[in-house]
Image 1 (cartoon, rainbow over the protein chains, first blue to last red):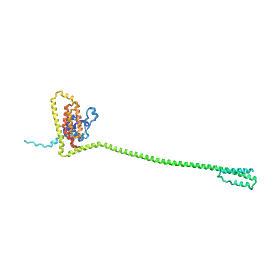
Image 2: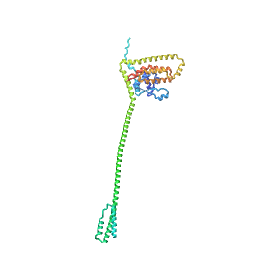
Image 3: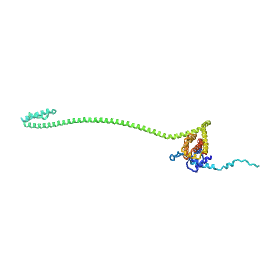
Amino acid sequence: MTQATQLVLRTFLGEPGQEMYGLQICSRAGLPSGTIHPILARLEGLGWVESFWEDEGNARAGGRPRRRYYRLTREGAERAAVALHRAAAPVGGIRQMRTRPAGGLA
Amino acid sequence: VNADRYFAHEYEREREDRRDHRRLAPSPLMSIALTRSTSFLDENSQNRYLYFAIRQFRDRASGLGIAIALSRERSLSIECARSRLATLHEAIGHAYGRIRDIETDSSALERDQDRKCARRLSRATDHACALDRAVIVCRALGYAPASCRKRNAELIRALEWARRCAPDDLVHDRERTPAVYIDAALAIAHGIRYDLIAADRTRPPGAMRRERVMAQDVSPLAQRLAFMAAGLLPSAVRGRYLEEYCCELREITNGGGGLAGQLAYVSRLLIGSLPMRAALLSPRRKKALP
């Protein structure tokens, strides 16, 4: 899992159940739009995130086109939490398994 | 002499009566009286007999008259009865004819009503058939959008499957065209980015404020680049992402983002189009990690 994906997942998990649109996620995660959209498409394809269009009435009231909102699903929230926990685990075990060159005697 | 005269008178009278009433038979008492009066009886006895005979004759004559009158009345009544019978026969015949007419009329009416009923039944059957057809059409119309959606999904799946199953050369040929466009778009986006950086360096101090004031609408160049970025995506989701990009572009403009902000946003979208396309076209596994 890339750092950008972790940032996006943390943004969603920071406010669980809260729907956010693309620019909002960009500003909260601190990532550019060209990075956010592929990640969101991948998460949506896996079923971790669901997306839906904003209500037309609300958009008209705001004087803007309707937004596409993204929200973490229940299964996605559980799996994202587990995946982030694993990603944050120390990698010391792997480092210890690496062979080290033997120290010189000289 | 008086008796003879009386007898002769009565005799004449009887003859006249006979003439009048020819059907009367000659009386036996009368013949007896006539024979006895002339032969061996004395005058007194003769007179008495004659008187008695005359009385009887008168009684008989009156009885005969009554009988004649009665027979006349009887014949009249018989004729009257006959005429009445004839009238009755006529009335009965008329009634029979009327009954026959009524039967004919009723059978004709029944036939007419049967025909009307048959016509109504056939019409009702036609209506029922039309209703059945309408119900079938309504159901078909109801299923049509769902079937269209299903067919679209099947088409997308088939395209993905075909893309996966296609020979490598074909895949490369197909992927080459969008890749060329992506390279061109990336080059444009990088050029714009460098230009923007250079413009920021050489921009006068009041330029940013002027730019914000002027940036009330989305730049046509930014719109064109957003179209290009969406055009690089698969056709199934192109419309959705184009609307999303345009919406975000409008949000940036409304939030005070000038031309530079719009172009920066669009250039990042263009740069991210290739991984976006790969993410959308890659096979999705439920247990995979993003």
